[in-house]
Length: 286
Image (cartoon, rainbow, N blue to C red; front, side, top):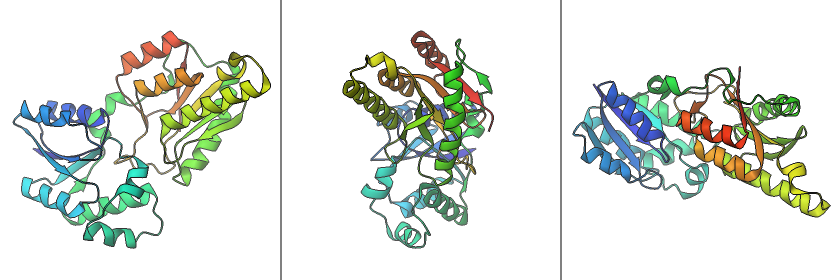
């Protein structure tokens, strides 16, 4: 059995690679030069069932040719490709340029959906990455030792409405809330950058008012959702240790994610860090 892996940045591609190999798949990796960790080459060097081909963003024809030559008929996407890379750094080949010209809007969903259709037309089925990583999906309920308190619950209820509305427009999937007011909304910069910005905003408010930093900075709640019509083949919501560390620096005390539609990477260590920092993490039903 052979699987194609379109690898973005972070640890996601490596987790999926390990899971696919554990299930007996040979894996052909299409590594994106602008994003993929070079460590992927070391992984391939130690496993003859893994081959790596490096491509630049925008080389859609080369991706298809590579998968055809390797006999790949099913593929997954794993790992983020920064939105600003997609829309500012990309140098499209003729096939991708034609696709871009035919898009109604240049949202991430629209673009990736169109790429998936092109792959499908070429006999390459793009499947959900979660089919290999189901144990990493957040289960409904409180995941940490501390439950969200009353104020945090109110922030979650308010934040869910805002986040789902924003996600419906494919702007971002995360909002940061304090006292039931929206402090920051994720856009192309990504989740962690939005959390950092919220922390900076709250700190500057403290400095202007002269209030102690702990008065406001420790009451941020982060709410992350899937899109209303989330395509689990790409852009699946992911939480990792880096996000929790960013929350600690920003002064956020609570994180809400959607159950069954959010992947938690390095779960045990993530929860250990969150518990030590007094952060509450809860997975809510969609």
